[in-house]
Length: 156
Image: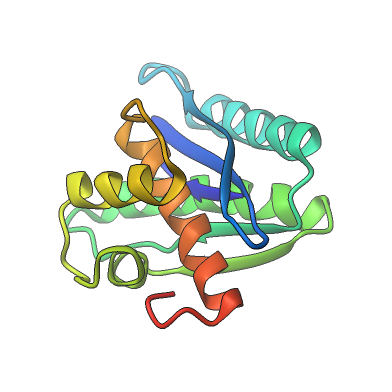
């Protein structure tokens, strides 16, 4: 299960690995901008915990922080990542973290790829007919990057 953390929008995506990688589920956790930060973090934790409980992944792959120009935004994003990491650890999952550049490199061969390029590759690799939201496709990309590394794919 991959997660693209955000304080307002968090994407998640679940894949099955094996001889063929398959899409199982995905979604978006949205929080209200005006709500206090603790309430938004609780909502993220509850939704990610519910997805873990429902889909029972073995591994939780979370996108690392990138170098944001706004220190406050980075701090809030760090809090969101913290509750997501906590959800994975509390469920006994193996938790992995990848930098956005690593994920983009694994899927597109270009660490500076645009989100739309990443989504295109996610759709192609998983055979999706409809475009997922960008936050969800980023989460699926994280899961695919881990799956590729586990299989030993050169791109993963």
